[in-house]
Image (cartoon, rainbow, N blue to C red; front, side, top):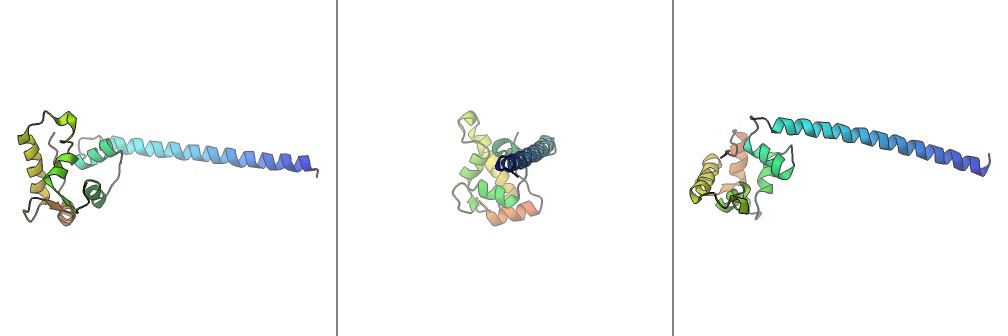
Length: 143
């Protein structure tokens, strides 16, 4: 075999492998996109809880566990959620929520504490969160 023939064979082989890889990768992306669309559709149904919709809409996360949700929203990494962190999680510190009354802000904090703060100390510990989630407690939807 001549050198140009070997080079042509190698080039043909590499092009074939590259094309196969690109085609397979494209199929994989299409499959992922379809799965993501299905998950987004499921999240957008009326029966999705507030935390699930929040994770999808605000963080573009369609699947999560309660420990990750807690950690993501424990802004100061203190292993507790304070009233400030609860308000921030609900977007009440955002400029767009400027018109929300203090009464409504307090209602949101009381609602979350009512579900998760078992010892009544005014914060939600990571342990309280995990226990609450395990017994079916979810972040209230305040509309």
